Image (cartoon, rainbow, N blue to C red):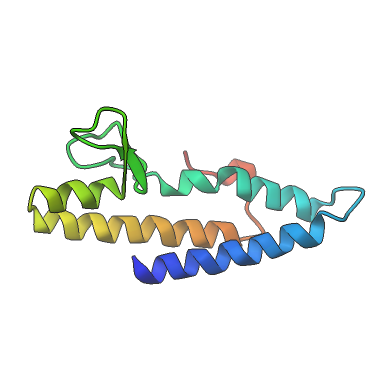
Length: 121
């Protein structure tokens, strides 16, 4: 998870640098459209296909309502709730899953060939 977040921070910095360079263009290029697509859809890369443990309808690995907080969000909910319940195996699997999703988001953000049709929802 730590390596994935470092990779995502680097990808985000690179994408931000590209956006700053492109914002001076008077006529948006294909490159700026591709970058906008990546910014618009990168959030979907944080969705866990199988959902959170015990709550399959919540799929976001970085934030979701807590089990006992109503709609108040918890950060890294799969990890947080597993540690709170002392389910160490589940916590480890959620750390790995979150790391995989963050790494996938970093790759997605860096990939200049991404097209809207290729996005997995």
